[in-house]
Structure formats: C-alpha cells, structure tokens
Length: 85
Image (cartoon, rainbow, N blue to C red):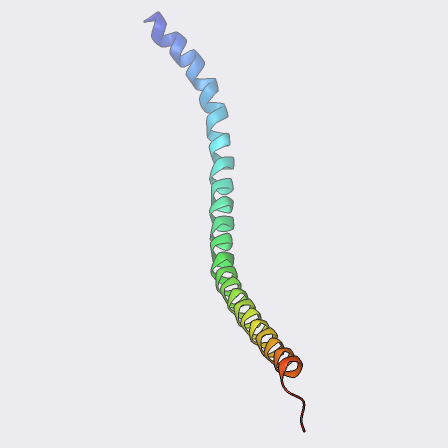
C-alpha cells in the first residue's frame, strides 16, 4: 500500500511536467513534418533541374568534342596536303 502512495506521489508531479511537454511536442512534430514535406517538394523540383543541367552539360561537352575533332581534321588537312599547282 505504501508503494502505491509513493508511486502516486512521484507520478502526479511527473504528469504535471509531461502534459505541458506534450502540448509543446505535438506542434513541434507538426512543424517538423511540414518542413520535411517542404524539403521533399523541393527535391522534386531540384532533381529534374539537376537532370536538365547534366543533360545540357552532356550536350555541351559533345559539341565541344565535335568542334575539337573538326579543328583537328582541318589542321591535319591543311598541314599535310599537297600545295595547289
């Protein structure tokens, strides 16, 4: 019987701390979930933008490679061909 009284003597002040903490925790959890939702939405925008950038970079590098190849062919042709008569 004394054990129950001691338990309630400890439990009641603990509840007086726990319940206000719960009232603080629930809005904080709601804010965190909203922030997580915003972050995921931002990722849905960022990932396609990154994909577009990488595709554009690939096209640019391919065009640069083509230009350098054409320049190499031009220089090779102009330095190794027979002069006109």
